[in-house]
Image 1 (cartoon, rainbow, N blue to C red):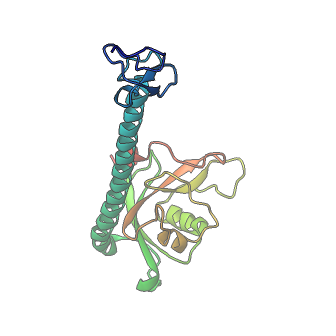
Image 2: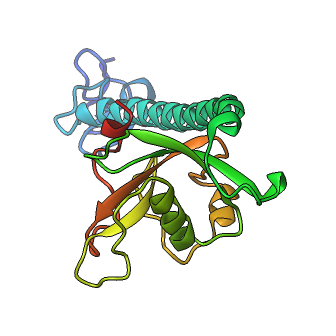
Length: 211
């Protein structure tokens, strides 16, 4: 006897078994045909799983790039620290500074001088207890640089970080910059002296001083 069609059978072609509601609820289908992709549902959104897969892939790539950037930053910092240790031995032989300072208080730098100076750079040492302002005044004296830091209208001679280009605040203590976890100064490392306007907080084209 032929099976009666009472409207509760699977609507997939050639399948007339009793059915359930489909995922979208717009068709009747047996269990094996109830998914949208099985019964060619007009509400099937193929892009969603593809989009989800793309998003997952994008997250993997982003996470990988983030880890790579952090890793490169750590390697760069380690390289800078190692280079400074090697340079320190040479700086101790040639650097100018206050000879009365105990060796334990001395911080050595290769100081890159303002653009247009007779010398490109000069090895110097300073006391770790000095303020940045005092370091600048002492360095200007050693390098015979014009220093109008006491004049409100003139460009100021500033000590700038070799990596970030940041003009170090005049009232900061040199030793605190040696102890920083993020972007510290290194004993035996490089630093820049340059004239900046009052509103300039960072030195541009830092790499050009090392060329």
